[in-house]
Image (cartoon, rainbow, N blue to C red; front, side, top):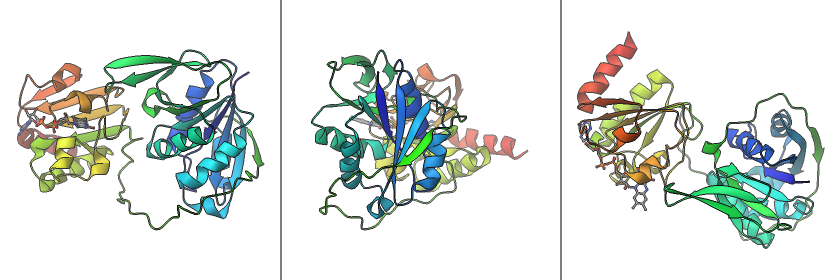
Amino acid sequence: MSKVLIVAEHDGITLNASTAKCVTCAHAIPGAEITVAVCAADASAVATQAARLQNVTNVVKLENPANVHALAAVIAPQIAAIAGPFTHVFGPSTTFGKDLMPRVAALLDTAQISDVMAVESATRFRRPIYAGNSILTVEVDVGTKVVATVRAASFEAAAAGGSAAIESVAAGASLPTHTRFVTVSAAKSDRPDLQTAKRVISGGRALGSAENFNILYKLADRLGAAVGASRAAVDAGYAPNDLQVGQTGKIIAPELYIAVGISGAIQHLTGIKDARTIVAINKDSEAPIFEVADYGLVGDLFTILPELETLLGK
Ligand SMILES: Cc1cc2nc3c(=O)[nH]c(=O)nc-3n(C[C@H](O)[C@H](O)[C@H](O)COP(=O)(O)OP(=O)(O)OC[C@H]3O[C@@H](n4cnc5c(N)ncnc54)[C@H](O)[C@@H]3O)c2cc1C
């Protein structure tokens, strides 16, 4: 039987939605028994949320003052120390998981499967390569522990309704001293998180300045949306790089994606492949974004956006 250990992503208070998506992925493995590991200084609140996810059997709390900040170098040895009985160890393909899981794989002396987008069996998985242009099927030797990151955009979050058992475990791993927390500098925003937002409005090079991005921020607030950006807009300094959507930015799957003045380069499209409805605003009717858009508005964004704002204001 498959026993899957999922490393919870959280901020010490709230479980990140990416964990519930890992649960859905793990549940696709026939007969999988799912355990969620919560590493924290005080894991109680997050463990309670994880225990409520459907199809989770156990939640283990790894409590240690060193876990107050989610440092991959500190968490990895603890996960590796408890991974023995598990056939699979999963983490989300977010910044947190991409930092952590290769370390876990290395400590377990195995290779990592990155960006699992579909499960074919306990040992066969599909993942995108070449910016999503090809899908690779990878097979792990039977008996090899599977360490993987799960492409959150490819799975729905597991619903609430479970009642898993919660227990505390002592990892007993010796923790490294070479890495320590110094400071965190994160953009503070009242807008929804780009990676989990249901609606996202993104701007491209055509916005022309950081000042003009304010038009998008205003619209986003009206729509209850997160703001994203193309790499060209980020490189030009119009938007901070944590807003970048695409192959080298964030992979997102909102219900609504509005691309404003974005051409639709393949590296950008790979980040929005799983968006449910795509709206494109572009003055060039031949722009590749229109090939993937469900709705297209051909015209100057500086005319269309104020009109949209007026409409929403009514
Ligand atoms: C290895 C690699 C990784 C990359 N990763 C990413 C990534 O993660 N994310 C990403 O986005 N890109 C990425 N890129 C860059 C990508 O190839 C494109 O260069 C980039 O996406 C283009 O951004 P853009 O659409 O904003 O700009 P452009 O391609 O310059 O497009 C601007 C668009 O705006 C339209 N426009 C101009 N003025 C107006 C107006 N007034 N009103 C309406 N429309 C207007 C134009 O018709 C055009 O279609 C990557 C490239 C490489 C090589």
